Length: 338
Image (cartoon, rainbow, N blue to C red; front, side, top):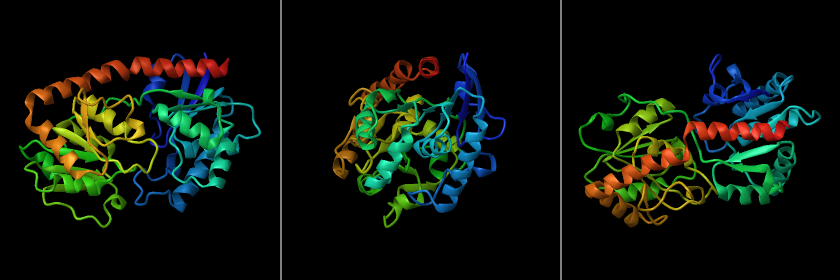
């Protein structure tokens, strides 16, 4: 049995992760406490104060990791900072559990990030595309990467409380998320539709956009409330702008876990998740007409909708059962701790 310390920026004191409860290893969980970075920033890139909090939290985490054989961290920024503070130590081994390519990708940033990430033993990605992309970007060997479909804890259920749309009797369309989203195309696609549309985003996503009359917008709401809104939606729609190599997996998986079909525009990160005609529909990127047509088709064809909803539930059963995901992470720990 291996002693493992698991860090997540969302954890509060005394909380534990689903993995810690299911792992066959001895896993302790820790969060940032008062040094938690804002999970709902108003800007695309991390602000100075959040960066300072993350640096201080990672310095403390490096000290806390003494006596552990493996440290699991969530996200690339945390891993890079922890690697800096652990650079001269051989232990613990470090795993990134949810790797996302940095949004800043200049030559100097890539070189510095690659150097620090070389201290990381395994990098878990949620898209096969990310392996080739990140390996080339940071000059890291392919064998350091591990692909696992994105898996999350059971989403919150129950009646939503924040939305006027969700309180109505009509079925509504929902879109949520902030990374590489093209809400301009979405708004043009849904303008004038007979269905209410709910959007959960960040302020910067909608700057300069004219929100249609049938669209309600919510900003920076808790994850649990977003889950409840998804559970009551008829359909979720995600329009990507192509600015990021991989994104949106959590949005699709959350939808599928509720049996909600998805319409989205192509993105490299969708490979293996959205299966056109089985659990959702693909529409051309940047094409409001194609997105609108797909929405109308899914909302009016009951037989197609039932087929897609069943496909969503089947995808979850086949790809993201908690036992298989936790077992895979235990296998990664076994490998690097040997």
